[in-house]
Image (cartoon, rainbow over all chains, first blue to last red; front, side, top):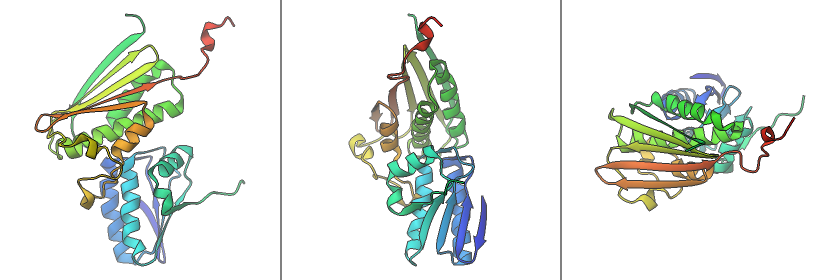
Length: 104
Length: 151
């Protein structure tokens, strides 16, 4: 899993495809990083991602459950139309903000 | 019969085959000249069904998953079958957010996604014998068939 920690904010750079196969490992790694660095904010960066199924929703919801206890937030950035559709359909947008970039 | 085509694949229920399964189905589907969105919808639905077979059908034991695809004119049919433990209560399993494994953080959205992305989803299951998910999707709905016009 590619990630970056800045103070209490964790950015997770999601792979090209997010499915059950790679979600399990991502959950384990993310939880370890969250625990070690007292993470409060998580940014899911979808720049490289063109496929995601409901396993990805499980990754987001699970991490949110952990950090919402300390008033944390989850964000999505660089989500393409497909990913936005998946996020909206799952209802996860109720707990997660999608960051929209300004037109360059 | 004209305008029909079929394919079947059988593979081990390993999670690394989830990607293979959806790409194989998507690749067979391309002969219908689908839109990018139609392919993505079918890939997502197949991924959900195969994931269910791996996690729930076989409970991570390695056995065989069967996929059968059929094209009849512009209708794409795909069946995902396992011979695993089966589902006691199909109606309950298909309810959004229902999950038997909250500790594994399954979102409970698998069947909801299949239903959202396909035109029809049928589940046949027998406890102890296995589960078959049958899905159908019309491809190129409402699109004009410009190839038949003289250019």
